[in-house]
Length: 264
Ligand code: SF4
Ligand code: SF4
Ligand SMILES: [Zn+2]
Image (cartoon, rainbow, N blue to C red):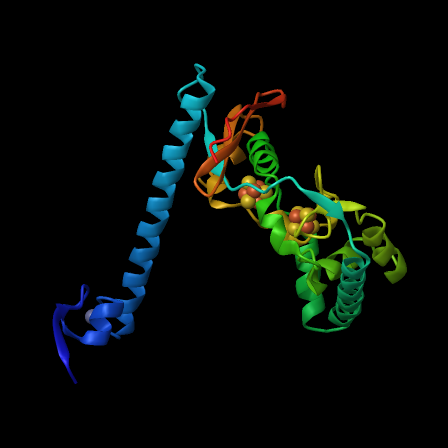
């Protein structure tokens, strides 16, 4: 074995050249685990620092005196281009939904799964709705929804939960409630339900993934947002390091966008 001059940053053992290049950390799990965690933490801190810098940049652009404690979310951005929802994509979603409804019925007949689902159905659904989230997601335009593709993240468990909550709903009605909501026009290359003015599904029938997800920019202010749902705030959406939109919302929910010069 050829060893390098470098030592493991955790246990100080000499490292092979390969370990030195990849690490510098040895293969011991008690060294690799904490080292990886430390790298992730420092990457997160760096990203948070970049978001804070963008928040300052945005304040300079709008050139207004605002409360210095005003929360500023820095979020991604999606280009606002719409196209008709193609027949091919409608069919793909229908296929996905049919298979999830069938699987959901199987889950409800499973003696182990059913009690778990019944417990979950009794729990309150995740609710991150607050003015801060509304402003952030509107300013962003729904970047994360691009991953919804032709499935909208709907799983058999999501459908099974609805079946438990509303036992009178038959499979055909369940199917139709989604198909009826498919928009004519959607954001290009995004989820089949991603309409120009946001998600076409009510929160109650969205997937658990959709209802539970928040991006890092919102997560920076998560505590504040859950303590105060009517928080005045600013949101900045960024595309490849360029600020593209700045949205402000007041305590009453009035939202305005500030013009941003095209720096591209
Ligand atoms: S959660 Fe984040 S990425 Fe998703 S729409 Fe809202 S601001 Fe955009
Ligand atoms: S169902 Fe709605 S919230 Fe979920 S990915 Fe699609 S558009 Fe976004
Ligand atoms: Zn080590």
